[in-house]
Amino acid sequence: MHIMNPFIVSGFGGAEYFCGRKKELKKLKEAFENRRNVTMFSLRRMGKSALVKYHFEKTAKYADCFYADLFPSQSFDDMTEIIARSITGQSKLSGKQLFDNIVSIVRSMGASLSFNELTGSPEINFGFNKRGNYKKNLEEILNILEKNKKKVLIALDEFQIVRTFSEKNTEAYLRSVIQNLKNVNFIFLGSNNSIIESIFSDSKKPFYQSTQYMMLDEIGNEEYSEFIMMQFRKGKIKISESECELILKLCRTHTYYVQYLCNRLYSKAVHISPETVYSVLDEILQENEPVFLNYKNLLTSLQWKLAIAIAKEDKVKEPLAISFIKKYDLNSASSLKRALDALLKKEIIIYYKEMYQLNDLFFSLWLKNYTL
Image (cartoon, rainbow, N blue to C red; front, side, top):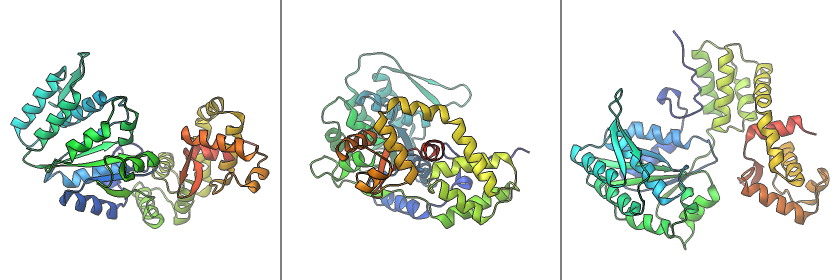
């Protein structure tokens, strides 16, 4: 019988493949039981959505839970459509009358509703009808959910995208609607920490101090190491604690990169040694080389040199320091500051825990090992 690779790199595979996060799950549970909305932020691909879906699984007995990824949204209209799809597509509403009411609103948005022949799940198809009442439609949907028999929990991923909408006062409108809900709670997820923090911690903004903050950090080394060894041993693949520590060190204990490297190692189905780890990592970096080389075409010469310099150091506290500039033969501090700002804006570089580092760990390792 084929055994599933236990190192999931996309989505939520179930409790069996989920590592740790007991404290975070407890916080989410307490917040929901006490009607507090939550703002959760972290680096990209640190496992926010998987954590929320695990929380949903544990909460499903007494609540209807919906997850909506807002990343594709370019407007309030798009956001409303995504939320509507999430609610009708999951078809988890406790009362049929409430579901019928949601469906009628969805149809008023110029959409048609059909049912999948295999699963029986409803599917929404939005046409190209004139838009314009989406704020009202979203408000009506939320008001209907307010009457649901069970409590309702909605997770809005990549919530910072609302800052890019052309519509004015989006945050103020959402805040005015959400603050009056008693049966519906929200988890706002974000991966651009500066924007998310601005939305929820700036005293001049509508969402100021309206949620409980939750920073999703790296999983503890000991806990993650035990999880890795357990999963490999289930597949009858030998691995020692020292190899687990090596994997975590190379991947900065970043969930996605740890999972991806372990996924590739597991697929080899061989005894895991340090040589195996480095060999598979090298394979990954070589596969991605065309993508990494393309980055060079998108950056100026100084931006590229600065990216390499930071990668060589892994993390840098003061990239504008004279010692750092001299070590890597960089330009003057003023021009370097412009290059740094540009890389931060493009999210090639991020500022995390008071250190500058490349956002893409594999790109960072490639620059460190394959460039002069």
